[in-house]
Image 1 (cartoon, rainbow, N blue to C red):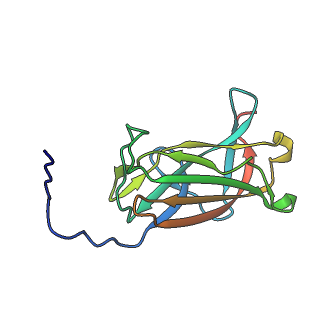
Image 2 (tube, rainbow, N blue to C red):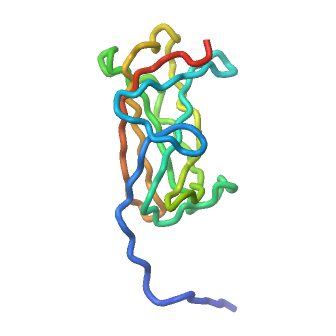
Length: 154
């Protein structure tokens, strides 16, 4: 026996999907050209901790369940603007995690953006951070910020 239950008629109208690049927990926006510290990772790599704020998501997903099919897909890249725009990540780093509701918007929470360069090749450089979010309705939003990198944990 197949049972179907409808919760209501029609679908809600979605507003525009918008995202913002930040760091910290809670979210702190990153201004264009602002200094941003990178850290030394456990396996001798170097990374920024990036947070993303989103509004207009079709569904925020579930931050406690990485397997939730409604979780937005978040991709992170880093480019060295002082090194000819070279890609610093192997590929986009992809997170399929839900966003938590905070202050009328949704936040991903701090996540690692790994960069494959030595600290002396990053410190003092302008690094362009690119973020792309695809929500469960298949809509994309992209945001970029260029930061002045410094080694926060030498």
